[in-house]
Length: 85
Image 1 (cartoon, one colour):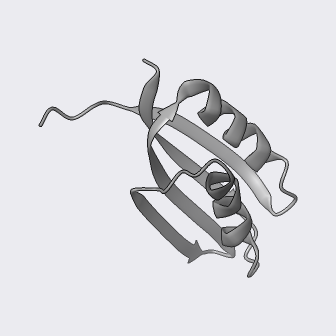
Image 2: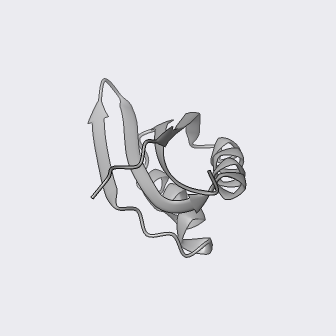
């Protein structure tokens, strides 16, 4: 599959810049997430977003860049199955 939707689960430090830095990597590739959720629990920020129509190589590049952000503790991504209309 070349253009899949991907879900990214990101654990980050609770910091005002964490969410903006994560979203910045998607903005650089002109990707608008179709779902975004951010929660703060137990002293940790959890960011979950889905990115539609994102080629797999681009998804891996974004994940690798997210892992390099000092405020990010972990990144998990997985392909989402296409939903028939």
